[in-house]
Length: 316
Image (cartoon, rainbow, N blue to C red; front, side, top):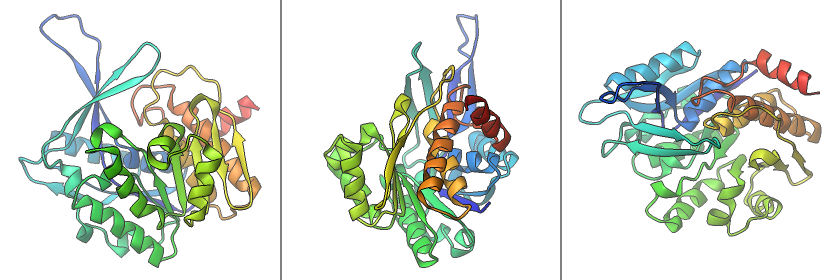
């Protein structure tokens, strides 16, 4: 089934819990962070998975490592940072419509920002079917250089690079800085995934097909554009198409895009990248993303391989 190696941020997502006391505000901690979610999702879908990152020597760092290891994710690539550097927290608010807002509590620098290029070794990457990262590690050094190092090693070893842009405008100094940082990794990427809301600020277009053509001209082999409730768009130089989403009772969309990408990568790890395989991979991705919306937290509702097979069979 292959091995998916991911790199980047990992956080504790903090959700409000039920409570009646006016002098207590209870919370539940759940592990999160896009690349960590992809690693867990890939592991649940039957792939080997490894995560490269950095956490604090603190309560939440311990918690995250236990969570990843309990899911079968290899953590030999995770380094620990001493106080006062801390593992980041993201307080998550869910509206009645399922929309999310995040409030981040981070030390400066945060633990995930201190991953260095020396922490990324060929040994960790060797044998992978894909490596994956997003744009958040590109905000600061030294993790920016660590991310580029991962892409360079993968290119040297002929391992496909999956760049899930995952643009969070409020984390950047300004959009131009973000565009420059993202642009620097596009030429090293084999698969590029973006959300339809990321196209205009980063590529100056709202049209998925136009965006895909731009990225394919830069050397990408496959472009994926998630369209929310409308499903997803996929494109290579030889073919393109759309796949639908699946109807579920959604409560929290956190992790849905990560489930989508993991399902695509796991399917494509099987070898063929022809039109039938890519379409099936994208369809499995939208199914996995839909299932990820049915529970609270980024990881709790990520489907297993059996979950996904049953769900798709039931949906026809």
